[in-house]
Length: 385
Image 1: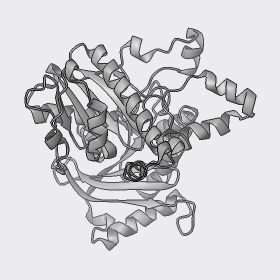
Image 2: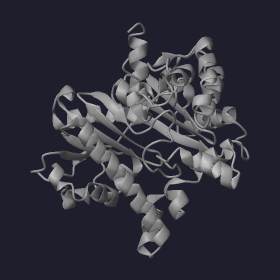
Image 3: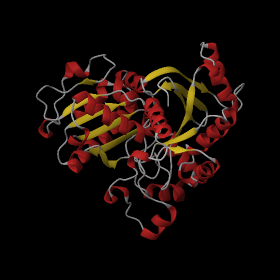
């Protein structure tokens, strides 16, 4: 793969298509954008969305034919039990991706549709699937296994898969670079806090636990997702309120989390509501922080010794209050935040713990598009590895 070759990274959602053109070797973002409101108005479907992305590139002075593309990388949320390495998409793999839709009904179908239209639009380029679940594929059995009947779990592939793996892996490796320390020497907690949110415990570069499970619904409280709930709630609500599986699933994924409790999923708006005295918004924030602290404490116990805690993604990188409140009072556990550093408006990788803190606390921006592009470049260079 020539140094100047670029990767078109495509992230297809149900109503949006995000794209980026990345030079993986120089870690340069050449162009990026998002096409929204698919199925509404002029953007009738994913095919129209991809064409709109091509038009945006042309209008910005970067027509497709000038980009020297080497591959198209597709973010795929769920790879199931068998697809986890970056994978060249042929007809057989494409069929397998379609069969995985029941495992991620909200995420995989639009990804499959995006792959379909991109393969048709760019038939001469290799198309590569990069899976959110890949980094967590080899979780220790005790972390990956649910305590349900073994035959059911084995028959239907029920296990902890974990998600945001591309981000957790990228950030954990960037942490090692920032600290100028060998990756295999560090015990890390990575907190990916965006509209979707997940935590991971990483020992020596290998994940040993993560908060998301069979689906991206488990774990932390998120923008619109509930995170952990008592599974008995479903049968109770089904009996008493008459809600069916699909309706309740929609509630848990789209109408819960801080939005369901406080009416906002954007933390900037949530903070404004709290400042105005909105008690529902305050409760939503408190529940979010409480769950986050439980996972931090739990993962410190799993690791035994925690060298570094890192915040990343939209909320993690930009919300000083969330970082402060998540770590408040943890000095006896070796976590000492420096308030001045935490409040800094800097956007790059930075230390926010005090100089004397036994556990280092960092903010490290994630870059999933770069990580996907680099995974694609590596597969092209070493197809048999």
